[in-house]
Length: 368
Image 1 (cartoon, rainbow, N blue to C red):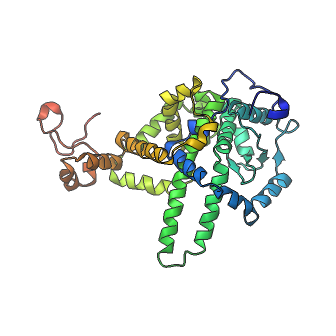
Image 2 (image 1 turned 90 degrees about the horizontal axis):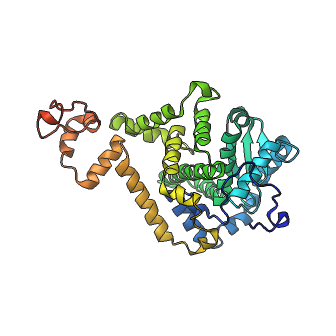
Image 3 (image 1 turned 180 degrees about the vertical axis):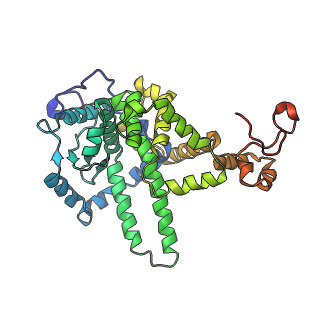
């Protein structure tokens, strides 16, 4: 997109308040490394999405478009104008060449999505519109615009289509286990793509507190006077570090069927990124351009993804992740921890240097 005029951009408005714009920004600038590596690999498969777009008649996309057109309200200058202005602002800031159609559908459950193969469409529920204030909603619209810019709508639909085909052959011996592995991997990618879109929402809204409030409201409803962002983030810290190996296993089981990360986790991840050097560089105008996407290395992207996961494991306070980190680092007290059972993985091993370093009772809780 360029600034040559509305006949090229389709935009006749600039953002409603002064916000930094990112001309030509590539979605690689804000994508989570695990999300980015998958997308880079898919984009390198020339003609992959073209083939499936040609098969879009097999998908319910056309039916969904007709459904939203017939039974929802299309956002425009005459309907939900404030959302229309936010959408134009988001597309202007992210330099999105084509403004996706946007619909509001009657549903008390707060939700938003970006779907479609040929052209992505954005759908938000009345529950979400009624829950969020203007700046919080702006972050959500930016989140969905980020999905559109990344191509998540296309690739999600393609991979879901492949999954549906695979499910039809699940009767093959061990086929069900293979299918579950595929679905589990897809959900893991979906969760990382949500973290990417949260970052896009922050780039659009450029108000980290509004992004935090929006996530907090999605978790706890429209009782902002009863909630506190710092306390909400402390929940994420407690979730990450609390409990023993049993809790770690339960966390995994709880998250496996989900397409979205838990809201406290999303808030903590977004705050971490907002305080990072990567975010500041983007805000200073230093970011990858989409005209360089074709030159992106798949192997480099996968190395970045692997490094990101390794860093997460190393920095995590979760007992299971600490165990994995210890195994990788050759922890000497692993046998002792196993002998002490689950509690051995909840607390540090007893000090070997005497009482001066803390309680010498085996398995005694220690601060820090």
